[in-house]
Length: 249
Image (cartoon, rainbow, N blue to C red; front, side):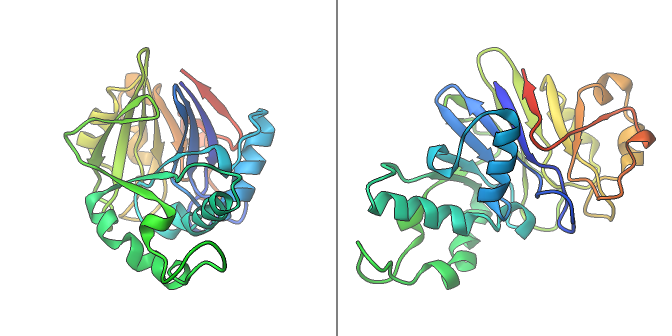
């Protein structure tokens, strides 16, 4: 499993893309979260890594939650893929993997900009199913995505949000998603060989001081993401991720 970091920033970053990653899986590519501008974010990070991957080659997206810094790119991703199918350039509809609460609210969010009929190749109002094959992730149930086994767990973020444990035949990888500090969530993520954990200010996020109190055996596994622009790496011994960085497991 190889994980390319697309963005490391928070919702207010002036310098970074929203926290997200692209996994090179056994059966394709899986995008974790979809910030805006997704096409520029993908181009910038994949160019650094030499991957040469765009939205036309990503058939699976996992959305952890609907806050804009994690999901605003879904609109342009959906338009790009649907127009590509109508033009005969892209054969498949992307699969969008979300929790049940997100599945129930997603089209309410997207419809104002995406429900109009397409100018060619369709009739009547568009639906969510015209753009995405929506699949529901349930805590306690392992789902196979692009050859990876994926488990999820709800966090304590103010809107429904899922963290992820992702396994292939050799190794495992964790993704905290947005979360206040919760030791139970960290212990769940600690099943992975390496896991990405957010660190930011406010009661809805995890302050670096809380992560610094964890045992060294756990801190050594953590890679930091969702960081404020003024984050000082010297205040911790945990490694801060970089856009365009590849984690090879």
